[in-house]
Image 1 (cartoon, one colour):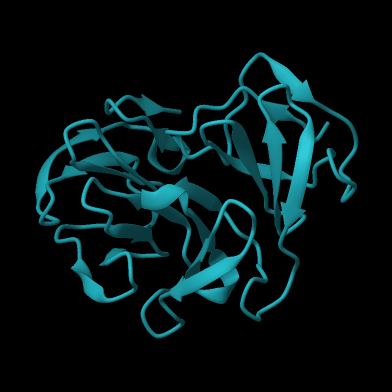
Image 2 (cartoon, helix red, strand yellow; image 1 turned 90 degrees about the vertical axis):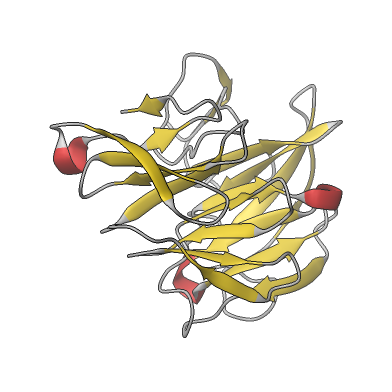
Length: 219
């Protein structure tokens, strides 16, 4: 079944399955149905579901009724290719990790394209995205975490050893937590991108897949 579960907006939700199902059914591109839902964020009066298979975002009210949808497969502005993560940023803007297009695209909540951040030269597969307390954009790629300003200016990358970062999230203290899916490690970085500490498991690639805003790793 392709269905939306009661995901937290603070967890990379590509592999999460939690008990309460909101909607279900076979994979579909019809409004209100889903084609591999992979991310969810909450706004004030609605929530947004990112579909990897459908290459779109659907908007729902708080009673789970579909309101609107935007996005389609492609490489042009506003189009998506295997998107893997969504984050809510300053001003209520939506940031989408557009993985195969090697960028993060920014949209209004009505689906209007605002800007694109990064390119194939700076982002080798944008896998996850998080917005910090200053509005800067942290993007996990195939082998690094890169940081941009909200306007798209490149600020730098994280120090430390990262092999295949799967998920990046900002915690309540303003630090960032990065899940490395090869090492089976969650590393905490400060606002300057310096490694502070880490949690190591013996699970390797089967180890932590997500992390929440208070630093709890989820397998």
